Image (cartoon, rainbow, N blue to C red; front, side):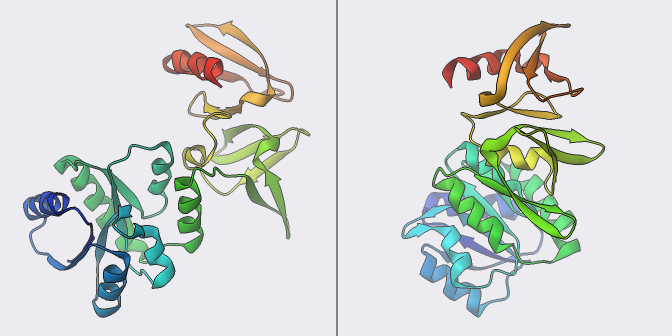
Length: 252
């Protein structure tokens, strides 16, 4: 396995090398880049199977590398920041590791590389990279493109009263009572949304605070959220999320 490391902290590089030595039998580090320029040069000059990219390096955000050259290999991002938006990096064959990296988390990421990437072998989508850059800048998703027959409609995120899962599909319920089928799973949509506006109350539902009318006590110490156009869809706050949901309501 040929590995590229994009990291400007020598201690972090040493830590990663020690972990890789313990977890992988045969591998070669083709280079260690401390800057975007060095990384692009190494990518253009070498065949690479896997990359470890620190998100913030000495001359900018490593996502810029994707704009400068074709990255035809999977990337595991590393970061010292446990930011909400970083969760979105779980898209497709992208993963992330929070520093200091543990051997268990690294092993899980390597297993994902073996099980998923090797079966698809597709470059990382530029649209995903663009979305991650927006999230890092603190810009949450403002619209979705929704295919309806042969037509594509634009759905503004502010117009969604809640998101829900039904029969293996993910839907957005709009303020004008339309049910729009989305391409992504609920757990992938949630990190893209503004956490001040949206809350995932259960495995099946994400609600928009601007459309909540009432909240009622419900069985088994749970809560029921009333949104005007929820219809037969019961919006129940799971018991383990009741406290964080109340905190969210009070602080937003």
